[in-house]
Image: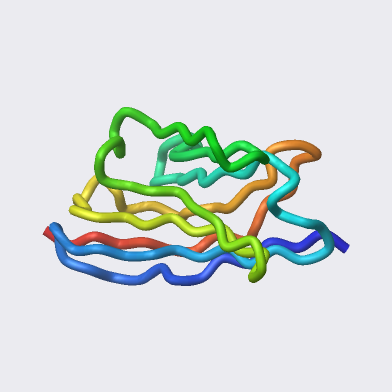
Amino acid sequence: QVQLVESGGGLVQAGGSLRLSCAASGFTLSTYDMAWHRQAPGKERELVAMITSGGVTTSFADSVKGRFVISRDIPKNTLYLQMNNLKPEDTAVYYCRRVWPASWGQGTQVTISS
């Protein structure tokens, strides 16, 4: 059974950092394209970062470029999102996703105070 479980969210001040984790089970994370999305209140879910199955290519939304890093730990079968220099507009629920076949985690709340 495919399962994605996010953790690491919380409340931090602007300028701070957080690292989100996404523990995968039921499949080998490194053989699939993986992504992080976020959804702020009243807004549509948006793609934040993606890493290809080979791990060579990563891509980021313009709003987080230079601040966020996506990575994975193959032995732990875990995806990460390192978020630095956080801003209040980064406040959202963050979701881990296996791109295709699509599978989503339950989300973790990130709140940035000004």
